[in-house]
Length: 359
Image (tube, rainbow, N blue to C red; front, side):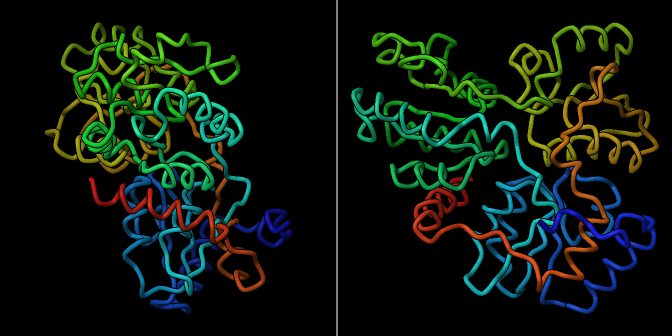
């Protein structure tokens, strides 16, 4: 497998590898683009052509028909989405093929199909719209598209709920329970309007009455990074830094989201920080690589992660190194690109196109 890097790449220094990446990119000219997610290491972002959240990068992948090769520095589901949205002549490469997503893995295909088989008894797609978070496998995106649903990201979850309720009575939201719940509350739903589907239990651990009553059925999945942040962290920051601004990601638990000054996607967090005046103290509840990069970019502010005690790193995002990217770019012709089967791609594309339309 090509993630077992040759010694030459394992031992080379960051500066040398960055130069080699830039040289490889220059050699390919306009034929290639390097997309980097906000959670990537700073040295990866530095050599990239574009940085963004999963929604922003999806838009780029869908719009750049002029490039042949997309080097996606993110995780597997993002590279899959890029392949679905790109043209047949384009190839998408994931520099480290081991970069997955634990949250996406919490929604196994068989478990979702089993849940849907139950929900078909309560109206199925005539009454219930599946909404899949971007953090899901291509097969689940296809399932969503096939049943009239759409994909959402933390950037357009509000619009996805509006679209969903404009077309169906109920929503089936997976795999992140916290984004689904926080979006529901923001939409105006009450806690009792939402039910949690526990995929380890028969009928999701719900009664028929609970399923009938629920306006949103939430999958019991979560982000292991954002669930590290607690209400007590916010209280500690308020006590220690009374003037501090607290901004968090909507994958955080509701008790954290409800007490923050601002809530939004990774791109929102970047823009929020950029809008604050010099001298601001900002505590951020999201992935540490983004926080560190923002702190480096804005020395005129005091920026730090919310908990002050943990290192909220997305280990899978952190897997991708300049070593991986240099090897991938210099040997891509010998490597296997990320490919989604045509039948899966057809229905997943429907769900992704709806995502891009409703934002």
